[in-house]
Image (cartoon, rainbow, N blue to C red; front, side, top):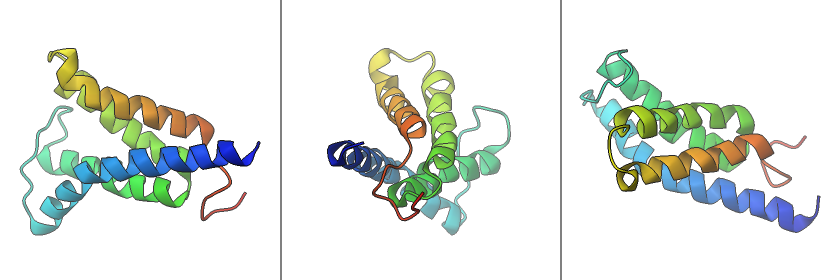
Length: 123
């Protein structure tokens, strides 16, 4: 693959994961501060759901930015966005679930393509 392909993968990882962090970091801070009030769309309880959301929206995007286990790290984020799009916003109009769907599709592409040449972990 040529350099443009690998730069495109880097750009995809940085933009999608960086934007996802704007959703995940506030949840991480709530978790750290003990504010455990959170929705429970899958019936695990608010605390467990918040922990899973933090993993999917903060921890895994950080790993993806760094290029560490990118394909595996994308899976929790994909699951989180699928739950957001189809369960949390399932009955909402498309305009309301659009952001979750865009993240979902972007992270599916990241999972399929991997990190590329520009990552901390060299293959």
